[in-house]
Length: 230
Ligand SMILES: C[S@@+](CC[C@H](N)C(=O)[O-])C[C@H]1O[C@@H](n2cnc3c(N)ncnc32)[C@H](O)[C@@H]1O
Image (cartoon, rainbow, N blue to C red; front, side, top):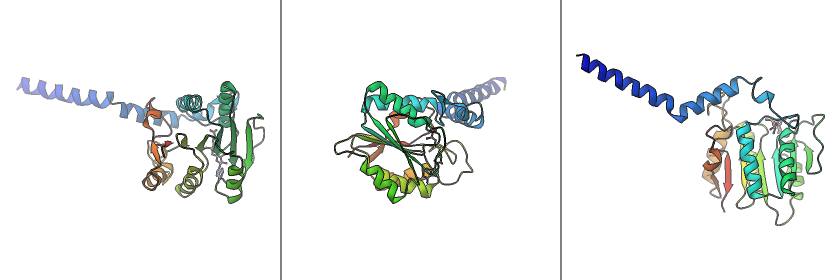
């Protein structure tokens, strides 16, 4: 009898231990904590004094990608206060090349001024903005795209279609905030970037998810590092 109870206790201990050491659970719990404690974490993150809403682990991945790919141009949607554009511009300073064109529907004051950054105002899916973006791409340039504007599915669907075409082979489109709608945060959000990218990838075999960019386990962009392979 006692032996049977001990075997059962041991089994329960093993289940509990495997549950808590599974990296999926740790990643989910950390992701939720980081998101929930917003005033301490993501709303309180700065690059060179400028606020930016990105997970520092993702910014490190950005740095690695910029060094590796050395893009001529990064096209960003969702400028906000310009912190992410400044981060990328400073990475370009370090490698001695590169420009950023970034668009936001709102023109916020006191954005950083930097020779490498061009700010556009308007909706990222507006025809005029798309034409302007395209006119800034010179023939033969390596282009990378970062989508970080409105995170509703109807909008992201359009951005993926429009901006996917600008990405050069071997380069990337980073779709930000695929963690929304329960992956693992904001389960109440409704269809967003994750739902969009799933549909997009079925129709666009020229892109694949590069899971190696999720090497730090925790990312705000699960399935969001999209490599153009053909
Ligand atoms: C998540 S914030 C961008 C954060 C910024 N990239 C950063 O890392 O700090 C989203 C931005 O998208 C902008 N936005 C919303 N709808 C948009 C649209 N249709 N076109 C362009 N920008 C839009 C908002 O004004 C907001 O500044």
